[in-house]
Image: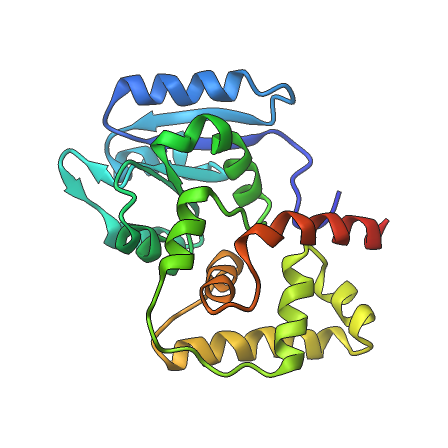
Length: 232
């Protein structure tokens, strides 16, 4: 498997204050034919879950509303500490979804969770972007005006990278060094940071690219398919 893929069962900790929701997630995980995911911890308090087995989990599945309080600010704190986070919430207003994406997490709306829950967890564990319908809708509707100017080479490097290619593979495709590919990607992040739209993770940078029309949300699957063929 590739460097950004896991060759073992993925562990997830659920941070949620409704037992019925936790039971539902466990049921979806158990019904996955490949048994790719295992729930190792659950609870309604972020810090308590992290102090236990959940602290070593590959992915955190976090409700945005815990005991009546929205914890949008905690999401950036968790991703900033290097944790992979899927926000699992009924609060799918565009401003909440965009705040989650800006923080470097994925957003999964509870109404769409049966179809996308396991796939989102697997993608996040492997550091692959995964665009759920709620995320796509919020990104397409995003009308924030500040868009940095990326060069054609920067855009090309980002597109190939979003296909799932390694930076070395992108370099071979473009006829440049891996170091130059990294420079293009880092420069794109720097340009976004300069206009107040941080993109510290691959997911966040993909969100920016979709928001700014560099690629379309419905092209993600096509890009991955093309990448798989080109790398085979």
